[in-house]
Amino acid sequence: MLILLWMLYSMCGEVQKNNVYYRCSHHDRQCVNTSYISEKVMTAALRRHLSRIAIDKKLFEPLKYSLNISLKDEQNFHKKEVTRINLEIEQCTETLKKMFIDQINKVLDVDLWLNFKNEYEVKLNKLNAELQRYQNANVDYMQTDMKLLEICHNASLPYSKLSPQEIAQMVWQTYSSVTVQGKSVKLKFAEPFDTIEKLVRTV
Image (cartoon, rainbow, N blue to C red; front, side, top):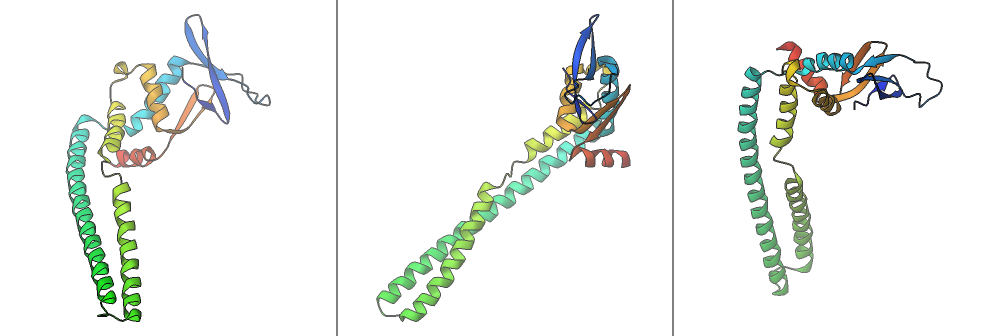
């Protein structure tokens, strides 16, 4: 069942003579909307709106290829940076150990040792924080981006290949708001689909 918004009020579905119709649920009793809209009309309207973010196969395949290339570049960069930071942490830690031994052996006086110690500890903390950011980073963004592409590609499919349930699912994945007034259905996309819609218009 599609769950939408009529202005600020929820809608609910009812079955009448084997057909589904939607109306305001009157969750807010001040709502005066008494209109019904059939699932067929609503589904067709939503399908037209989804075509605004449609990416056909000719565009889908090059985008998919570009994402694969981008992912490999990002993974290589990530790997190099983690290796670099770990090496610097190791070098910094070893330097601190050597300076500590030099201070014990009176090679470094206490004041000089404390200055070096503070300097290298600050550097070590920054390196560990940088390493943590890389370890927490989601490098494999390919999966998320591919989901976005798949949704936009499915939006380009012929009307006959999409069931009302599939259209409802795509609406839930892409919408910011859906408003229904009479037989008029308006859909506003959430990001990043709002931006995708603008890009599709320029293609």
